[in-house]
Length: 157
Image (cartoon, rainbow, N blue to C red; front, top):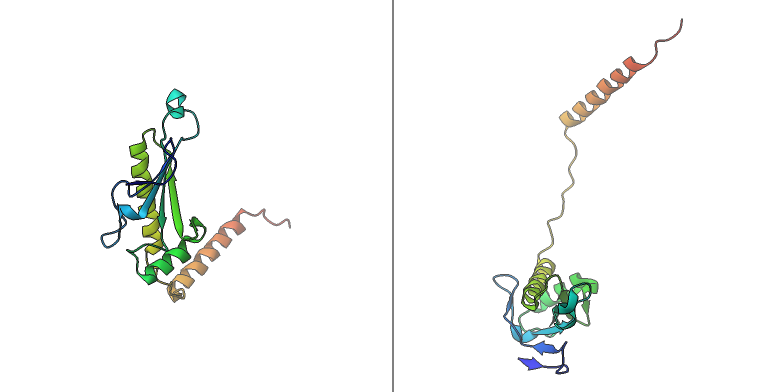
């Protein structure tokens, strides 16, 4: 663990916590993660003003050692505006405890990276409607038309 920021509340920690398991093949080591703790906004009474419960976790995709070049390119192109200079940052402040927010943030990071690394879906192959479905469609339109014709006012002689 290495402290990078100031020593008072809201410091920046590197190498803190456990590895983030994105998939069975990809595990982000704790040494590549940077954690930042700050006070969460919003209501919460006296507790919120004294504890740093908001958590931000950052991961430098461009400098990571666990990614291949193709994975790195795919991540950076798919994440788009979610990264700044190759660094992906995820925050969590849903819970009152810092530990639960840490778990939430690492889960969010794993989900985000996993979704970005997933292979693109197969392309849809366009098909034509079958002859039977076109016949049924026309038949239902004809029946509907007959129903509406029967609702009309009878002609005056």
